[in-house]
Image (cartoon, rainbow, N blue to C red; front, side, top):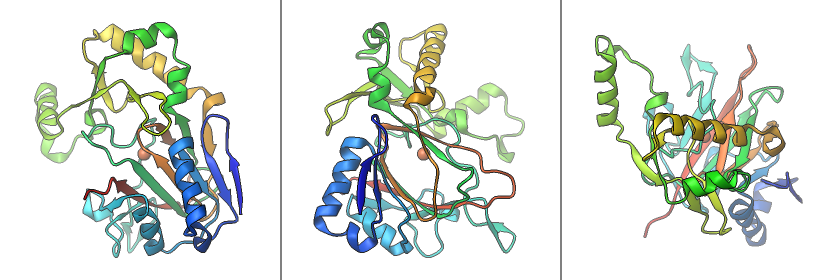
Length: 281
Ligand SMILES: [Fe+2]
């Protein structure tokens, strides 16, 4: 088994590791430390059954069933299937997920701290996942922005990502917005947070999952999102994970920005996703 840092700013990669290797206490300890300190761990080409993926997830916390039941694995409710494949003319999973920069579920009050993906069927030439480290983003932020954002609260929302459904036809824009606010109340998180493991400050929030910074006017908000996008999109500080079959990828949701890139026409892609909550006594 080999262990290497992926880039100076994010990631630890384990290669030539089997399931039996991973569950050895010293190897598992190294993986957990990698997740905590490097934000993202990639285990290259590890064959896992769905149950083994869930068992690994359960070592980090509590794997929780995906909200929308029709996209759960038919036998394992903790696995969400992200896929563009069809079976019996029905989609076997969610086709388009996370194709914009975000931190997982930042629009809820208490997001699950870890996400784990297993690349069951991946094309390799497209459908990559890009990652940036939110602490690295903070470090690169201009000092005047750091001063402007200290002690500020961000209003997070899933509202920008919602699609208009049949039952919304006939509503005015104002009525539709009011309905979103009722069904998906905005939640507050400090814009600058401190990571409990690394002690580093990081930015929590992104354009697509945020409404605004509390107290900013529309011009200041737009300037904030533009500045933030510039830092997140900087390719010299982005790791692009080019999937190889059976890669296992684990990240800390709060400190890891990521985006799914397009899958080329005609290519099939299926990834098994597990969301991991803090285990409560
Ligand atoms: Fe995501």
